[in-house]
Length: 250
Image 1 (spheres, rainbow, N blue to C red):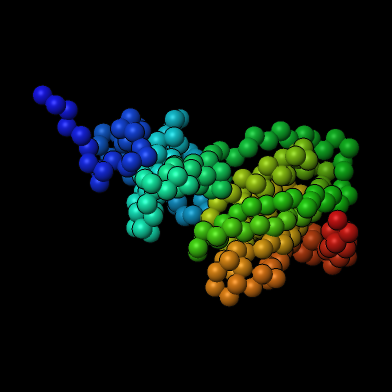
Image 2: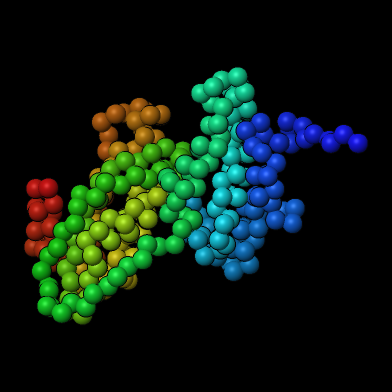
């Protein structure tokens, strides 16, 4: 008896049957399985939330395959012939992998491991880290946000200290999600306050928004700069001025 073939409407031209099976659990799409786990815990899963605790080992690959299938449908709805156009033949898989494993990766992986050190020398002087290059995406249009972040920290004698590279890794983890800039810097400030317990923390972000430059008003020169000041930086105007003056020199 001849083997029945799946129609193109049921199986993408760029996706093997093995991959299609890999993203389904007991006949239910993997994204639905993950969503149900989150809802069972009454947790939030907004675009800028991290949901790594609800994803089991090996499931990210399956999620990539599911996104690729749906992205293929998007390309077909845009009337792009991905079968004969060599440039877009595997675009759906590439885009899916980019979203899940790169530009939105901060949603799907655990927070980078941090090694904290006691403040043995009782350091209490201003530290400035930056500019840290950041890449994010506007949650309204999924257009790139490209910019720089400066972090100011005033530790106390009881503060924990972390390695310099960890500031960059934590910043990247927070930024690799669809979000708006105003919320991103607040999230980063909240996390640093919790991890380091400083006297004060300050963050400034300066970024280009492609949702303004690439579409809409198409203003190539517009930028957005915003800041978050906590603790001593909020209360002490001299400390705030020192941070901003030193930041401007970098």
